[in-house]
Image 1 (cartoon, rainbow, N blue to C red):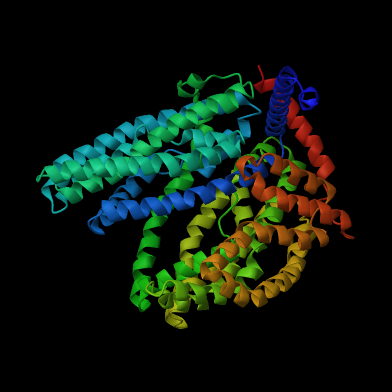
Image 2 (image 1 turned 120 degrees about the vertical axis):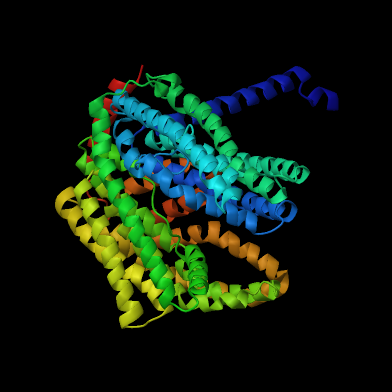
Length: 635
């Protein structure tokens, strides 16, 4: 009977093959759906990239810490190696910045100003975008040759005859990063073509894989060669290895980025252009003039004003007792504030530039609302929990690491509230700065840049000399001018750039503020439960739980209150879902929060009462952009 009831082996095999075939079909369907989402214009692409990067950021952090520990323990005989490295970068930084004329960053990625031009045309007018990229490559490679040659001649014929002769080889090896001078171009192109997931993947793999391997390999070779040759010495060999590793890591990063860009953008989106097209000089004078006339004058002004900033810093050190100590404490407070209210700025320049510079004003306004919405929502997720739980966390940290001298950093708590407020307000202040670049308001940017140092100097004198506030001046003299300038920039933006912009204040401000009351109650319950938890599972276990709450749990709890407060409308919750679908390996982190938001949004009495008003008009303009894109970019 047992034998007759068992299914035949052939049927088992057929069932298994059918199951595998069904899984493969679903995987292909999911990949097709994701590719369509990446092809659809909208803010969900930036949101998906932001979600995608969350797990990558967590993976890179321990690798960086491990690398620091391994390299420091095995290869670094003393702090002078890092000192030589920083000094070398400082000596060459000004020269490199002048030669890049504002087109690029230090290692060959687009500046925001350059990204603004390429992003405008990347999908809509691809021929012009390719020409702009060609000019960038041409400029970086030829000026890179000039820079390497000039640095080499300077080192061999001048520096070698001074007391800094030992720096010559450090400077020569580090100067190589300027040729070809565009090693991070594909990271920038992923942003311009709004594949923010691939941008995060390339940068994370470079930082977590290529950079550690290059550092260990180059430092080891430098240590071995320098130790075996007394004319070089171990310290010089290690320092040269360190500086060389930067170049090696970027070369591998470029190869990896080029491969991904070819497969994920050029092939998948069926772009007309090939990989080799980016390296041909086919641009014309008018295309170059358009870029240089905007970026060049701003760069000249910024370069000249850099000297005033340096003089101001030297002057400040004469007035503030223990300047270095307070700078360190302020930096520590900024790190802690980053847990409570993450700082930094959004990277959606390419997304907004594509809309604004192709005449889609309603879509631009829609994006502006979403930038403010997500920035302020993200900056308030952990705000109240960190503030309430911080004293207990610090107390446990002091007990767990009694030799770490954490007590020396406790004075930073005085600065912490201001640092938190600064991080929150910076999310609001950044938008007009971003729009000034996107709208190519060269004269306005130059006026702000010229007036800025003088205003900063005035407030430095006011707080340092007149009021004699000491260390508090280090905070106020930067923050107060920032507030003043940001308010002026907001007025300028609303008058001259986006005069019809109407902020969705409920979703941007009211819902996050209401959510803080719920988070306060939740955090108070956690605070009450902390002593028995610590006693039961030790402080290490408690810290693990706390990290979970910061990176995942709080976002889930926060969405309960944010959703009930009417923070989502039917369009934004759908866009949130699209972003989660594009989150890749981070989906397990972000999907639970979305599911909670979706559930409680349905229960919220305020749901859809305060929508982002121009969603329908924005969708019409998205359709117009996609029609133009499909006409120009698809084979």
